[in-house]
Image 1 (cartoon, rainbow, N blue to C red):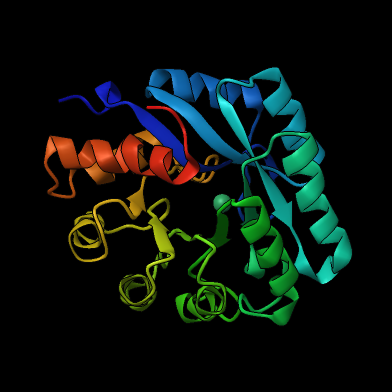
Image 2: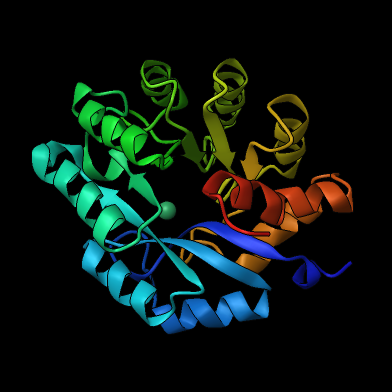
Length: 246
Ligand SMILES: [Zn+2]
């Protein structure tokens, strides 16, 4: 089956201009065009500042789901942002990137944000795979302290085999840990996660504009999963986590 025929939800993508080392950019319109081409019905979207994300969500409310980008170093202002964007603007989750903002993932500064996530019943998506701030063990320590909050390890270790392996190990240990596969190069690890972490705890994402949807979808397609299992990774698991109608 052609990868474009599978229904998909993109569990992690950005809009904006990412200069410097990355040298990539994408607009809301370009992302929608990619979604249309690859049968991605919805995208969990994040942007900094959050107003850029809100603008896109309000323009394409059926396609984009807002994720509040937090920086715990802002203290109470970060918590206020969570309540503002979730309660007043309809955002459905939190995105944190310890690498970008330079804090260790399990810093106690994350605790009030996790408490807010618990109260609002929304998941927290955390960039996973870069030392020293964004490693699976640190994210697991945070998840351990907040067992009632679902935590998604975005990139599930990213490009490093040891971190990928640790992401799976941590997710096997803590039932509130979930995995998202964008930027992670080994298709076999998608299947291993499906089989050993849980059939509903591994999901598809693109991390646009860093990786093309074609490449990310092909990793799922070459993972060795059956068509039905692939449909879980491409669509069902994220829909279940986020509480979307099928
Ligand atoms: Zn990302």
